Amino acid sequence: MNKLNEFQQVLLQTFKEFARFCNQNDIKYFAAFGTLLGVIRHHGFIPWDDDIDVMMLREDYEKFLVYREKLRGTSYWVSDIRDGEHPYAFAKFYTNACTVWEVRQFPFIIGPWIDIFPVDEYTPSSETDSKLYDEYHHALWNYRKAMSYQSWKEIGTDFIRLNGFNGPIKLVKQCVYKPFKKWYFNKVMRLQNAVNAVRGTHYKPWTEVKRRIYDKEWFAEAQPMPFEDTTMLVPNGWHELLTDSYGDYMTPPPPDKQVPNHHYYFVDLTKAMTRNEIESSASLVKTEASPLSFKVLIDEIKHRKGFN
Image (cartoon, rainbow, N blue to C red; front, top):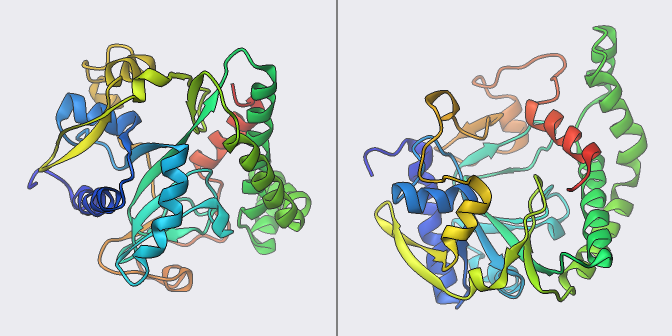
């Protein structure tokens, strides 16, 4: 435990509460992506990692969201896109005793979290399934643009400074997408319900990077493996999953690639703070116009390329 940084320690405690909640309510989860790699290669966090990812089959995922009401009055909560201000297609289990504002353009402020990716059914050879998932993906990105935050003063400052990329993008989001936020949300929910109802030959987790297709047999069982000073459930097909994602997964990347995936806009692990409190905080560096974060710029490129 001593080798973990402060953020990882909070994440680990949050995960223990998440695992306890799942166990008490008979909900199955699986370590996913970099977290699964950490379990197998490091028996804990990848040393430079700063998040925890898990997956749930759709039935468990929906049960998890229903049962979150049991968390009322505790130091933990679950947020999902159906809440109205949540900008992701997957849920987050988080501590509400700390503060993390990840991306400035999305003023979605919670504590350190566990990302919970729903796993739906999918048939690779089905053109209908492919079109449905593509439509769902694009609807979600349009909704994210509609809920993106930027003030008119900020947009004007970008144009005055002749910022040829940030200004026009922010202006389009403010004028073309934001007025129709509710319409985009309703479309996302309609398509999400359609995705949930798909029955196919394989599994497909929601990710914003690429379309991953998994054999159902890889998730037939969940087995506990060491993770720091506790255990985490991994799918029986963990080797196939890691090979699919990373190839030679037991070989660490070169030192210059051993960096965190996230760059948070604001973090305070000592207390929960509102947006107004954060923006008036002396520890927050302010600018007259905030450039779009690198993460948001990459998101824009991915969206234009499509889901594949």
